[in-house]
Image (cartoon, rainbow, N blue to C red; front, side, top):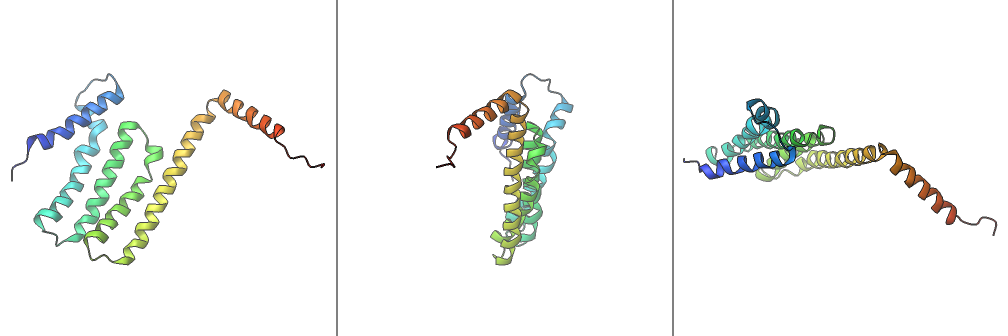
Length: 170
């Protein structure tokens, strides 16, 4: 089996270019690459290996390898996004989503056992709920840190309440 060099190096060059664009001027050395790209170098390839194993070597017989493959691949993507954007505080629900992805692959490529949909849906809904809650919490936290903006919002809200109040005496 011959690996296409462009298919391998292309995504790496795109990732490095995006990293340089996001982080600005930084020195690239071995430590920097390992610090920021350890999920791409070590975790994501293991997940891809499990998928390759199922689709190539096992020829769709050992569906159980897709569960760790989906979990590890998704966790690697979550870790990579968290490392690049320093968003560990909002990306942690992605680890619950990783379990849901692994189980969904077992459901999709396995016997379509309908009972697997229960934990898949629970994990997916909880993950999305926590993503929304912590994303909004982060947004309001950064908004609350700018006191003049919050003060103006309170003044406008109070003024609107006074202007549009219901007249209880009539």
